[in-house]
Image 1 (cartoon, rainbow, N blue to C red):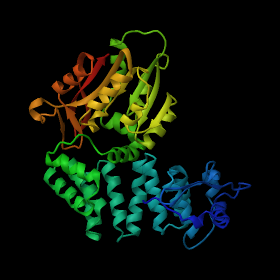
Image 2: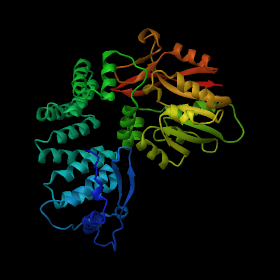
Image 3: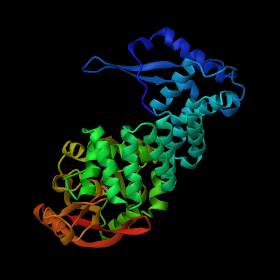
Length: 437
């Protein structure tokens, strides 16, 4: 699903009236439809950006759309509202409107497509399967429909079915780069690494500037880089945000935040007052939720807007920043934190020297830095002390970490060996570290 881009001509009273007319029939009991177009922004190249706000959709109830107006297919304005809601990440509203349109126009594929995509974004992947299947049936020659269906199957753990869908998408459009990439990911999950590498290379040939695909090719080719591309990390977690907590804690059996909180309370000195915590790569706020609110005030930073939205819902963070780690850290004052945490973040950064240096600068005397890593023995890693694994994540050696601690003036507490997650039924070895200024 592509983000909808409207030209400047759409920002007119006439366009607003058309949108009002498209929305109003779905709200027969609402006295007035309030809507407005906001945030005109002119970029450096004078392209007009927009954001569509439809406040009347917020109280939408299923009873208010039970008798939609009749018609052969959704009007152009109805379709525009639908895709604009999805493009602006108003997934709950897009779901409501898509459901109404599928009831009124059950053979029109767009509503099924948006319904499935919205449900997936809302973390309701199992519910998304039937609409995506319906879209594929209604669009048997649409490569995107089969690719989307494959994504749902993969998220449901049905990798073989996902591969079949990706191959069908590629049969319809052999130069479909996204399907080559998705096929590569599915084949890697099955442990078919040479085939996965071939699929990623085909995508890279079609999209040579795609940094994410280059990262996967490097990972499967045994080439270690300093870190994953920022846009790759952002994309992974924006797509992951809706079902992140459930998948991570239940499927992957991830409990590093709880272990981190326990380690801090066991080994940290009891300081008077509330301690200030900088949570690097805070995600949905699992670390903040694990730390007692009466002892810790949390500030979080993450590149993913979707993850930060989930963290905000916890109401556990005093401040949340959308930024890469280093940029945010470099803007903070010296000795302004008591604790810095980083849970399952360094799996996306190989060379962590600069982050460690900034953590040291930001910590007060006696401050604590706790973080998790995926572990690798020195004989399995290049001389740099870290390795990009075939999963696309980084693992770090103990000697590399000891050298970093010493060079930045940290004293170390003996680390805790632990399983950081379970993948394909296999525990991934890692370690939880606690360093003190």
